[in-house]
Image (cartoon, rainbow, N blue to C red; front, side):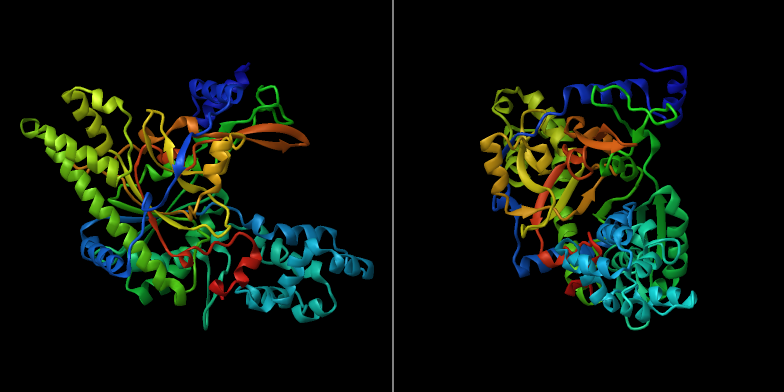
Amino acid sequence: MFSEKDLEQIKAKGISQTKLAEQIKNFEEGFPFLELKKVATIGDGILKFDEKEIDDYVKMYESEMSKHQIYKFVPASGAASRMFKSLFSFMEKYDGSDEAIKYFEGDTSFGSVFTFFKNIKQFAFYGSLKSVIAESGTNIDELIYQKEYGQVLRYLLTTTGLNYGGLPKGLLEFHNYKTVTRTPLEEHLVEGANYCKDKDGKVDIHFTVSPEHKALFREKVLTAGQPLSDEYKSEFKAYFSEQQAYTDTIAVDLENHPFRNVDGSILFRPAGHGALLENLNTIDADIVFIKNIDNVVPDNLKVSTYRYKKLLAGVLLKYQKRLFDYAKKLKKADNISEKLIDEISNFLQKELCNEFTSEFTKMDFRRKIDFLNQKLNRPIRVCGMVKNEGEPGGGPFWSRNSDGNYSLQIVESSQIDTSDEEQRNILQKSSHFNPVDLVCGIKNVDGEKFDLTDYRDARTGFVTMKSKDGRELKAQELPGLWNGAMADWNTIFVEVDIETFNPVKIVNDLLRPQHQ
């Protein structure tokens, strides 16, 4: 199947032939669907706290945070081009003629474009756009008055001007302040200063970026970081990593043969956000906050964000302490009793939602200890969940694991067999969804870092249909970072306020009150 040249290409990417054979086998056999037992709800998989309880968890975290090394991990490699999809489409088709104006004004599918122009002065990037147009000797108001919309968009989206269509989301101007604007990168620095700062004022923040944008991210941290450092009395330590080449997956044609580029080389593709598990695995910290780059708000709405982040971290510390205490007790072989085994089993099942099969009760004493040790000694994550109000995204469910037991999982609809009526009904009952709001503990009771790849369920990847050079192909994605990549973690779901979730998926999302 592979020529000598192919083998050289594969070796250069750092992918083993064994791994490649596994990927092709996945194409041939497919990935199994997850088996849902039930939806996670308040009181049955999702914790909900009253204001007094939230205050107590916040205070707990604030009193403990100086004792821990804390990181903020931000997946930030997403391109902004998808934000501007409708604008790109309009720019390519609109020629400025009277006929075009009449056509597009009557085409409801381009309504968002006219909403964009109607409200263009409300965008934080308007000042920069106005300036770059002025530098060319043109006036933005005049262009809009003359309905030269395509020209305005070229200055916004292409290298003619701001090149927003070629930049990552993290470097776009999102929010207006009195004298400055801020990008998502800057907003994450501000967040970090408010819930990730150590006793010396240091804030560690890790961005995963595309190789072509790393220098731009570094430059932005240097120019914007110092003023924010002075304002928030913080020292920002920004780290940048790229998706590793060895995490790319092979693409195949419809007959499951390697898909080849025009030059004959094999096509490898990035394997989705699940590949970032390797990046997360390099972090040596006690507590890691994970949040997407585009889910940020201006300062006037950040108080709620800080409060719920500290809530999640407080919950993490509480349950992690209990896990550690039990792990220590199981190390003392002379003091292990049936009563302790029952106590630990009840804790793991009733409070950490690990539902054991009847096989557990049949185990002898030694096997029970080994089994409970395995459940105690693994990474822990506390995941914020918001009420489902129609936003896309995975949801919280009780799901069957590869070992036959059930536990809490974040599941995407693509992982569920919707042709099965029972599974489809469970999916439709979902009351909450995943906003990607996680706090993670990635060290064991002895302070040693877990190898996170040991806790990934490799059978939770999935295959998607794509095309290249006019030809259809099948692509493969690794288990999602907060889905199958964390399948074997101890998991806790906590309801957080919907106002903490304000992602920007399309440019007009920036017109929402939360971003003004």
